[in-house]
Image (cartoon, rainbow, N blue to C red; front, side, top):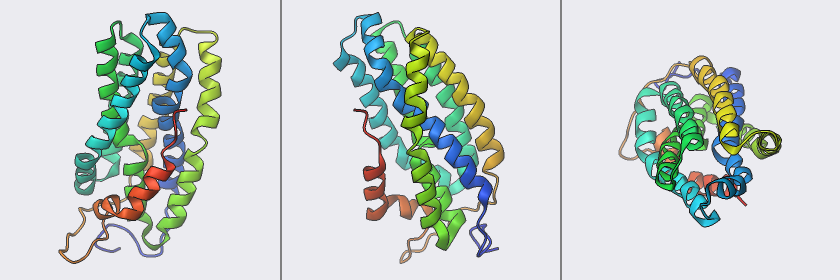
Length: 229
């Protein structure tokens, strides 16, 4: 085992399988459900579509800004506590969306959702696989990206089916429960590989933080971030 807590040549399957499942769910509930529900939210509340969409945009901005401190925290304590914490926050954040009675409350719920997204979507998952898989990280990242790309295929139809029988608020409650049931135990039990804080060298950059700041990673994250349209 090397200084980073991984065994050379080891290709752990559990974290990759876990992240494929939890990423599909996290993207599906926190990202892809909104475009489906936005018209119903606007019609029910009287808030304009631009106002409703502003909440979603606020969530994405918060997620991007929070990604930097979240990345530093992940570097120190590992992905299991960070992503578990993100899932713990995502549950009440989604319930807060469902319960919002005023536009400010709705926007505030998206701030919480944005904080949760920064800890459960691609960035922390990519950083974890980069550390654990070492020279085989490209294969692991590719598998995760392809699997998580199914989030819209899975959760957009599910959301459509739910909202055709329930209100948008009830739909968000159901999705919040699904999110908690899948991602909480997944992150707790599926991300338990050893993790040590990365060694920082002034002339070397190969840890998760360095990967997250690299031009290649930023380009990949930008290219793979799904569109809400």
